[in-house]
Length: 406
Image (cartoon, helix red, strand yellow):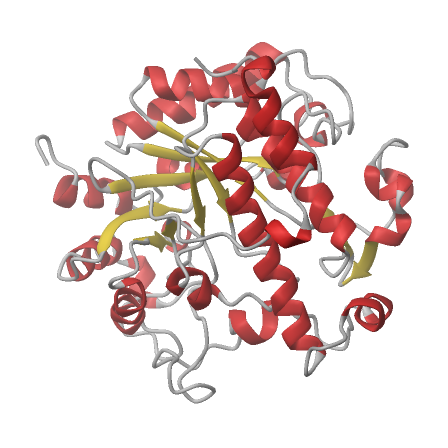
């Protein structure tokens, strides 16, 4: 079933959603490794109606039909997991008691679409033999800067002091303990309510750098940053706390639900840190997003990691063939499972390098990764491209690696 009686988890949910104190924030290693076959997944993105629904304002029946069509595509492509974005921007694709209905459904934030997309997705995915991982964006509030465009009851309007305007968008401030508590509550509601298989975060923690702009968290740093050598270290601790506390909350509500994160593919470049990868990426998650992804793996705070290794084999700044062994070495011995995020969206895009015009590029990725026993599967971005398959790259992956009996 998709939806679970709230009464079944009253005690656990109350403890995890409202009773998690600062002293409880250290989660031990989880190590609930994914059983069964390799990961064959796809992301189903809803922010800005990227994959689903195709546009805001469709009827409930039309939305449901499109969603089921994506699940059927996953089955047809011999995938086994759909990572469904259910909290794209401080909103919800289920009847959340914490946040408004997402505007991607009706075009109006807070408007009831007349059905339960997350509950339906869980039920229908399981009916097809697919896992359903609920994908949450912790801190993004809006892809604009006008709070008046948010529904009047939106927590970001009720608590304007929680919000930072940066780079043309609105974000919750990760440096405020009350923000971290709230976003955890909002996300864990889905764990308490639905039979999801995993909680999934993507690569957005502190926002990607925008030239000439400053993320204004000076007041929060002045209040909470004592004892840290600098603001960057304090910011990383804020994100560490979110990860640990989310893991602990999941454990308290339903331990079988796994926790996975899909970070930007480069933790740090070797030129910055001898422990980093042999890359020269312009973004480093540790330094720019204040997300110490390597630490989360080594500490065992998450069950799986899906680095977005979105570059072709031989790409100078970030070579897929150099990132895979680095990540394999990072997870080795930790119990954390490694899946590789694959940039299917680049295949056949004329704006991309020549390698991405070759339908066999992605298939070569899977062949290369197969040499590393730590690499236990792949996830493709994203559902629209899995269906459209512009130059046949996905069909090539299926033919070469996901054949009948494989």
